[in-house]
Image (cartoon, rainbow, N blue to C red; front, side):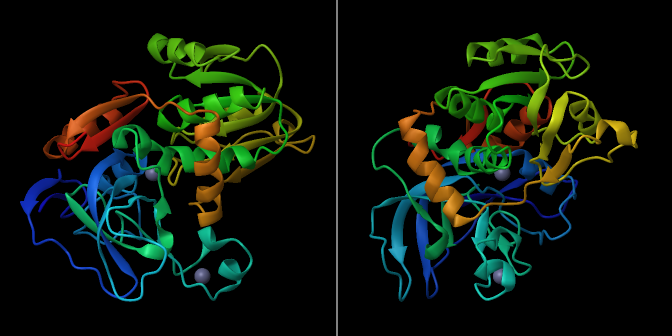
Amino acid sequence: MRAMILDRPGTPLHLAELPVPQPGPGGVLIEVEACGVCRTDLHLLDGELPDATPPVIPGHEIVGRVAALGAGVAGLAAGQRVGVPWLGSTCGRCDYCRSGRENLCDAARFTGCQINGGYAEFTVADARYCFPLPDDGDAALLAPLLCAGLIGYRALSMAGEARRIGIYGFGAAAHIVAQVLKFQGREFHAFTRPGDAASQEFARRLGAAWAGGTDQAAPVALDAALIFAPAGPLVPLALRQLGKGGVVVCAGIHMSEIPAFPYDILWGERSIRSVANLTRRDGLEFLDLAPRVPVRTEVRRFPLAQANEALEQLRRGEFQGAAVLTMGRC
Ligand SMILES: [Zn+2]
Ligand SMILES: [Zn+2]
């Protein structure tokens, strides 16, 4: 099979011919149709994920078809379409796993980080962490749901019943969350890089009540702010936009340093929290919700061999929506 491999941080991925992996007990071999390109993949390339174990095949927004089942796999059939997310496996025994918080498991392993991912024509996943996906439809449009969608959904759930929501960084996750917010009848305000008129227009097209730069103030006090951009200075900026009792949710796996800020912008029961990974329950809930919205992702497609180009365009913010690698069949 063809695969794009990261040998070590700070170097581009390289295309390699590898033997098709074989699923062990509990595993499933998946013929990949499409794999989303996530900002976390850039953090992996840049050496910002301390738990990563290169060499590794990146990619954790995998849509594909079951090609072979390992021993003991129940509930999946050959030919079935499945999705593979970031959460690749957990211990199942620790306090976190036993209290509905498997996303926090200390022994969790992550797809495209410690487990080879979907920047390849085939991949092997633990069957218990795969999600069934609809059989029809364009695999490339489904791929961003597997991380941008799931993490956006989990971040939104941390905002509780907030009615007015600020979104910082209007990329793949934001463009999906925006559609969910409209569906739920909530109001959202989009903050982009100052002067990024294209992203602001994209946000308005998806229903933003207001869109502007992160250096601007929203016209109303916000109940919650979701930060999808990996920039620590956004945290005090977002805090200043909150009404009392509001929450800033940091949704990325990595963020630059948060500058010091005066206590009075946190006072009034405002809070700051992070969102880490996902649980399988998040996945099932979101994948049930998405077709009812319905979420329509906007994607830029790249052939597998152009993964480096896709990553660099993501880094430079050159497109709206999500980048997706396709394996030549969609
Ligand atoms: Zn991701
Ligand atoms: Zn655990």
